Length: 500
Image (cartoon, rainbow, N blue to C red; front, side, top):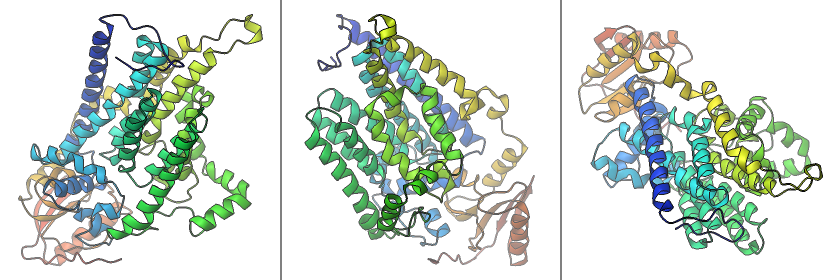
């Protein structure tokens, strides 16, 4: 039975209904998991997944599964930290360790893709419970659909695997458990959220800002705000350097100052500079618009929206790392569940209003918004990655992918191999994979792409020059097909020394 507060209690639950509703929610979760899994596995099979970032996480979780620190040789070598670099020195995400037992069942990147599908789909459960408490089951089903079709979820599924897959379910549990009056369970969810990434403290602090709007919650709010900010400082400035990383590696606010104190002072004394940064370049405004417009602006009527503001500001105030503010990749999924919950709460608040023009009658936003938001989520699909579900070409390997498959098959098991970005995931489960990048590593095996520009090369001509250079220095061509070239130099001595 769902616990209900007096303020948020929804329709009376009839005998027998909870079981039927639980089955419906279970079906929604399974359906979402299947959809996300199919999309991700098709991308993997058609060589659309990439070494950066799928192989990084694959190597890290594999290390955890063998009871080691999460070493990712591909990340350490490419970024100059050396072959023994642990990803805890990049982003502090120890929660990845909970996925390690899955690698005892299947050791490969496909495991991460399936795990991510499950994690993203599980957020439906607390979101449904939160909505059911206010509007009833039918609206909760609609809102679950809004989340399942949400474009930030689609973009996350469409870009390999990331630790942010844990965020929707944990952030929604944090909110829903507090809403249900289960404070300790709320705190446990917040604690788990802190282990997702170093900046999740900003999301916890933002939740504290929301709690400030709740009566009698000032002490708890202060604990969340202070604890969240303290954790982000500790993880960024102490723990990441302790694991071999740099505290300033992701400093992206040079337009405001050289470090946090200078940036904060500049923002306070020059507020217009900070405001301008929020919408410069203009794609930042576009991204923020896409976050709120499909929800019909209703989240703006809820104080729950305060919870996402610190994490959103972290990205939108940056002047480096353009991926942070685009409506792509995985960054926006951390905000999605809470913004949809804010839409639920906002619709509930608006439904209590009795505008003079309606002669004392209430605005029944609660009856309209769930259906309208679901329709809007469906209409947005053609703009984002799930549109590929409806394209026949999405399910086929083109000639380039078929040649890539042959190139991967030409590499023996258990070797060190430099692989072009899209070939790495296919090799990662059986070989030690390095990214084929702009520095010669002298690995015994190289899988090169000379047909399509691949990260991090600036253009395809540079890739062809690299292949010629390797051939002139003792590498033999094992396979050459449709732009893919497999090279081998027996006895080669790899150069994996740190360069930072």
